[in-house]
Image 1 (tube, rainbow, N blue to C red):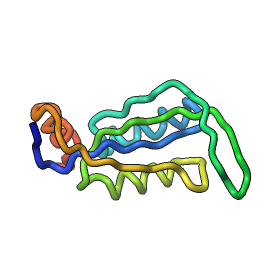
Image 2: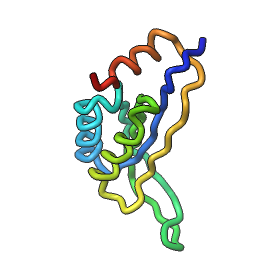
Image 3: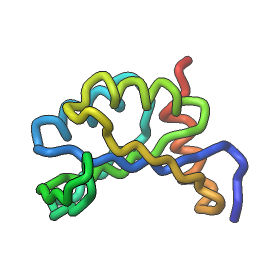
Image 4: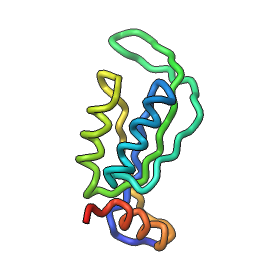
Length: 110
């Protein structure tokens, strides 16, 4: 079932649990996210400045909306320790209507 509310899933990775909690709490307190799911640290391998790098990273899966995205991105960038943090948003094109409405209700600012 689809519900056109502009729901998003946003991914970002962080180097440690302290930053994961800081970003999570900030997004929820500001009502920029309805939910942030933290996955345990895994190994990321990537190219950075012409070299192969590997590091342990925690992934945050953030449920939000298109109307909250700009402020959500600004908040992550302000709090993040990386020079270029991963911030990738994917539209939710279908889902349980009650869940999608909950995302919308929890990210409304008024």
